[in-house]
Image (cartoon, rainbow, N blue to C red; front, side, top):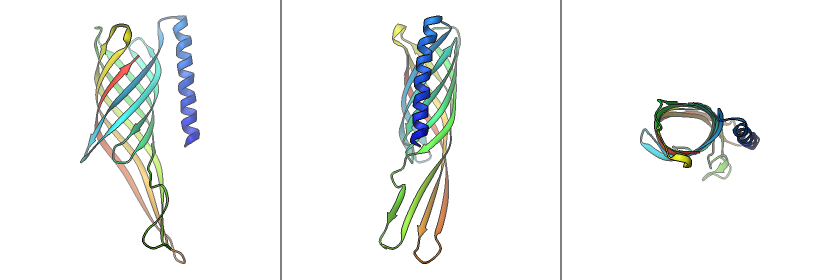
Length: 192
C-alpha cells in the first residue's frame, strides 16, 4: 500500500511541476489545486471527509488526481481521478464532476486478535475496491484569491473484509464480508 501512495504522491508532484511549466508558456493550460472538506451521509451514519485534488485545467475543463480520508463507517483512503466541467459564461458558475478510483481500507483491527480463549485467534484482512463520486456544485470566483466551491454529490465506496478464525488442531473458519456504502456527499472547497 505504501508503494501505491508513494507513486500517487510522485505523480501529483509531477502534475504540479508540469502545471508550473505550462503556466510559463501560455494561459491555455493551467495547474489547479482543489482542497475540500465535507460530510458523507448514508443509511444511519454520517462522517467527515477531506480531499486534495491536483491537476490541469483547459478552458472550462479540469482533470486531476485526488486522494482523501473518508471516515464513513470504516475509515479509508480513496485514490481517484477527478474530471469536472464548469457551465456557463458568467464569473460564478455551476459545475458538474465525476470521480472514480480505488478505495484503500484504513482499519485498526487488521492483523491478529486473541479473545477470551488464548488458543483461538481471529485474523483480519481488508481488500480495497471501487470508489466513485458524481455530482454538481457552484463555483464562486473570488478575484485573484481562488474559487470557493459548494458541492452536492452521490458517492459509493466498496471493500471486502475477510475474518479467519484459527482453531489449533482443526480447520480454520473463514468469513467473507463485502461492504458497499452509498452516501450523499456535501463538500465545501477552495480551488486555486
